[in-house]
Picture (cartoon, rainbow, N blue to C red):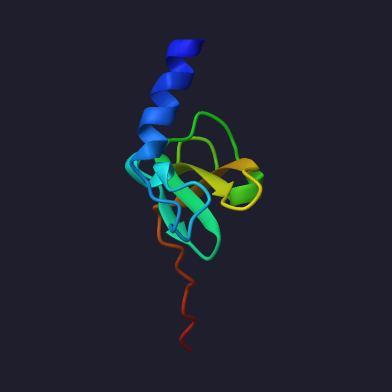
Length: 98
């Protein structure tokens, strides 16, 4: 455990104390900073639904985009995983002519 702690100190020594962020090392880990929160997208792919997802209005067999991301508060360090599914099928409304 001391080797891990030594590595952490070495990484953190690269950042100066004048940094406006509490967790500047997250930038090296691929996170982006926006208004007090660090966020990163871990999964972003097109998939076919194996079951219905009523929360996202996706039915079984429908193609959709699966996005999984993580958000970390810079001040408190509290993290949250988020999953979002977006349909790739355009919803069209029939136009009645008469």
